[in-house]
Length: 80
View (cartoon, rainbow, N blue to C red):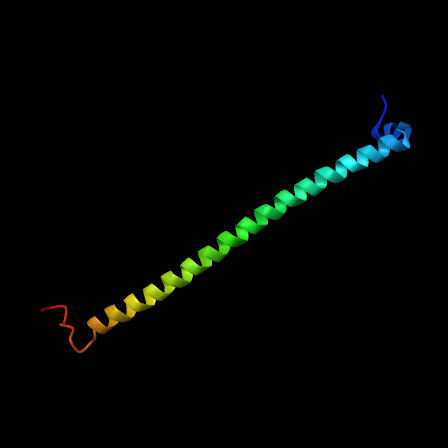
């Protein structure tokens, strides 16, 4: 049985260069694909952060509105 290290030694310089070029091309393609995924995820995160800020603002407005309507001076005791 021939192991990978002996097979590599048996290759010609041209074969080794082709093998390395092939591996490099695969890594470059993989890196480009991963870069695209990271870019899309960052855009999505930014949109989600914007949505969270909007919702927090709306919640604050609604909380203040409900708090103003239910001021303690106007509230009837629970037994009425």
